[in-house]
Length: 571
Image 1 (tube, rainbow, N blue to C red):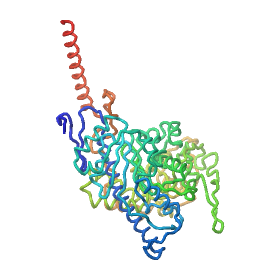
Image 2 (spheres, helix red, strand yellow; image 1 turned 135 degrees about the horizontal axis):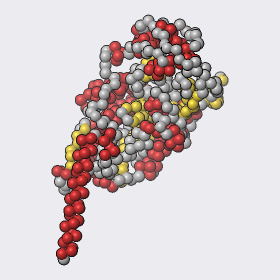
Image 3 (cartoon, rainbow, N blue to C red; image 1 turned 60 degrees about the vertical axis):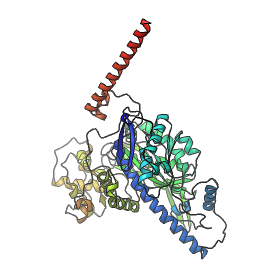
Image 4 (cartoon, rainbow, N blue to C red; image 1 turned 90 degrees about the horizontal axis):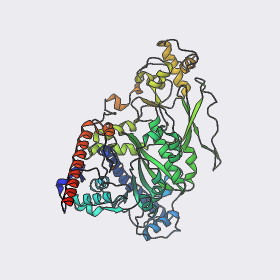
């Protein structure tokens, strides 16, 4: 290769290697190794599930036709879509029929045309191309990987890294200088997987991304603007995502649900809808993996999956207001607005007002079948994942979450409201289970507890706890005083319940790991000059080293300019 390797640092991650220039010309963030490993694990499972769905659809159609003969039936919309793909030289996706995703699948006419081809992947914001290279080299059965960037330097770096990774990378990965939105809009329903991992908000890419995915394809999306999604700038969040966030202990899960609701909103504009398979809050970002389907009838269920959130400003109790509901009569289903309001003007627990946020995605954010498959795959190939410990811990916690409970409680927050000592998590969980409700942890927060118990039951349990562990007298107008002034309707049983510990907790499996090193977090954008204000991101030693290098570079340039000026003056 016609370049001096001494000017570059070789970075190896998984089976891929990239060349990084000493200057921060092309963005690379090693913190995102967790993100890339999780994406590879989901992609492997997607390829496996896609093949199973295709075989099941083949079997179903052949059984319906009585044999695999070439009997022509009247083609339906699904067959027409496949034919269009064939005419455009794209991959046909008969297994990912939009009809298969609806709650009441429509009977499929016709036959499968052509065989399943390897999935095409679009990495819309590739930078150095490390993610695309890892997909190509590590995921068996992957087809073409298209890496895009609108920065010329990034595309040159990506092409250099493709050549550096040998023949497999050269045959599967191609890099283009293009605007991601324009490229996705001009390649509708062309990619089986679209990966969005921007530096900041993905909102500007979502409209084109949902159009670029084939029916039944996968959209992977990262959002790193957590300050916006978690309520730091509510008006900015509303302008970008169409939802208002609330500041609560569950704000990171709410960020996940806001992102899902936003993707669903964009998909609905094109008679499409999403089915989340995995949604993760990790490190400094949220990452969602959703299947995208086309169905005008199934799209009507969207209001049933969205809710507004009422959060009490006094005791932090929260209540969900579904946007829509259905009424069934004989075989017909009517879609109607949700009943309202679910809360009175003042909180029934403490008497304070409510803040309203949302809408958020209130349907399940994970597919437990997928989570189980992904976790099994990760454990069976642990040596293939540089971040194995972290992603297996996250997936283990997700596998034990209650799937249909939006948001979560914080035991410490409940006790802070009442100004009481905190029961252990095991005791509190036992009381909830003994009251006849379910409870689990959450991958978002080690202290978070998901439960289907209503807030009045939760407060009754805490009232019973305080009776055995009295608190100091507080002013009568405090939320905690108002709550404790009421007698509990439910008499809590704090006896140790068998299910009070999850299987992972019982086996002492690590579920929340510390960061592997100091200053583990988002790094600077490519091309940004490092200054002393970046110490919190990079560390004091790294910043001082870079500043010294910058000073020596400036001195060298100054001396060069002075010498050239002196030479001009002498001449």
